[in-house]
Length: 122
Image (tube, rainbow, N blue to C red; front, side, top):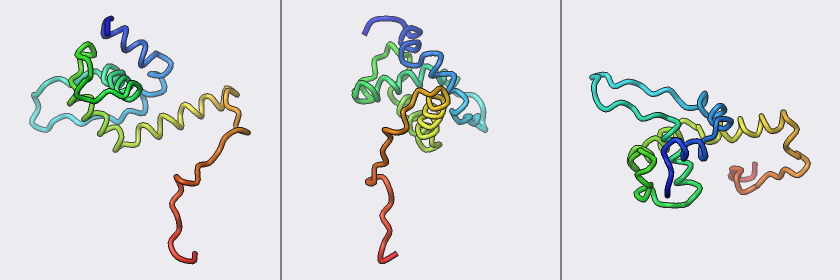
């Protein structure tokens, strides 16, 4: 990989995507004891996560060019997953595309495998 951190961030987390994503990212809590290392920029971490998810590389193989350790990227991915960020982001993007008339809802499908099966004769 060649390029700068800002180039990777601009490509993997462009302004339009980041404008939707940023308000959905949960606020982090400051450590009660204070101190520690300053929290890395959410947008850079988001770009690193997008890289891992779209390339399929292992977290431990995240290129150092991102300026984000694989541990930080994975930890933030886990935090954001637990907060429901990815489902919220998916919905926000669909809402925006739908409002712009860019989604053909007549071709939407529901996957029955993602619905919980009822137990018994209910």
